[in-house]
Length: 286
Image (cartoon, rainbow, N blue to C red; front, side, top):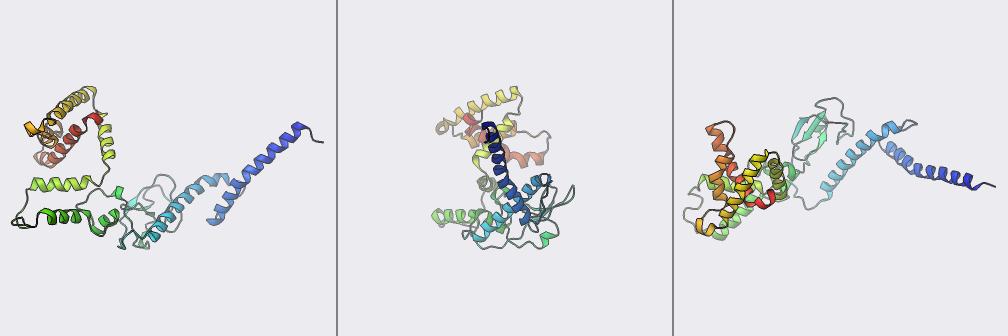
């Protein structure tokens, strides 16, 4: 007859064995799937093997999603590969082999993030599905890249502009002949570029930059923005909204460190925009 202590000890050992078998089974199955032998020292191989598995699974999921997603319009797009230096172990998402080397181990598509060997990039099919987070602008962007990133047949800027023109501009004299003001055109282009990025992420980024200011600068800017917000609350009388105040205060508050005329002219629209954001979101940012 077993004593109670001996029985409990035996039960504990059995529990450990039962618990370890599924893990061991997963290691063996994964090793077989990728053609790797896992022996007594398999624990040393298990961590990089898991990283490899994750990279391959993510690649398979991405390609499967592109294959079975009927919502994407069938536009072929070549990958925009650029030489890339990877940190940590990485595997090619095309041939599933390890990327050797310390620098420039392979290439990465700057539009969708696909990682492959430089040699494999020549054989990758034209199935690039751009990630919207990687597309920074609407203008000066490849047309196919833009429509595939937004999953539309045409660029949204074309649809929006044509819809507005047909709604209230078809009877305008000199339509398409008379040029608009350059500043207004640039403002519209910037507005389209801003609608790609998330508004909350933009405010969070501005807030992080404000936290880097010295205390005296931060307090002065905060006090000024509270005042300018009060000015905009009387817009009906003074005709000064956040955009107009941004034009006035932008060059002063956001003056570049180097007094360059070209730099000042180039940054003027961005100076106005950041001051406008500060005024409109004063209660959130400060």
